[in-house]
Image 1: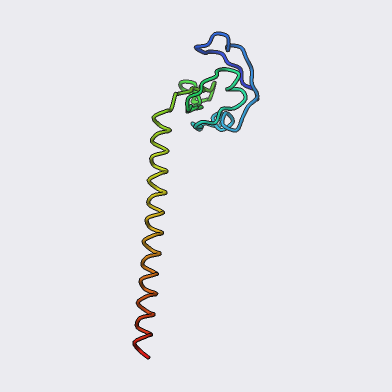
Image 2 (image 1 turned 90 degrees about the horizontal axis):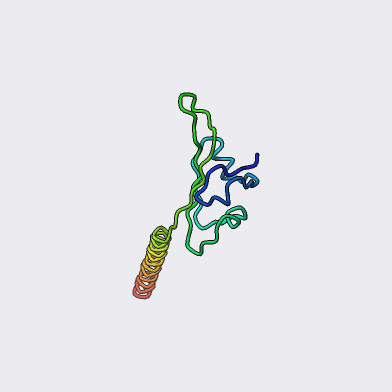
Amino acid sequence: MGQTIVFSNDKAAIGKSFPSNPESELAWSGHVTGEFNQIDEDDEQIFDVPLPILEVNAPVRERGTGRIIALIETYEAAAELETRILTAQAFVWLLVGASTLGIGLLLLGRHAQCATQAKFAR
């Protein structure tokens, strides 16, 4: 199923059609999807923004029946989200590194303790 833009802030985009993608297919099945910094070919044709982008696809349901009648695809500048993600990643790597170092030092200390005990046991 292809997609045709019926409303946009960019009037030149209205009426353009694009092939479906996995995110839109998931949205047509009733799920809200999102992509961070994954600009697809169809997105490149609509706008050229050097910022990190959050793309969200959401179904629009008919009142009363709940039938999906359209999709909303929206874009948000996500510089703050990117900063938070990078900060969280750096924290996780720091935590993994500190844990690895701590375990290594404990093992080294245990090895040294066993070697010292074996030396005195002779």
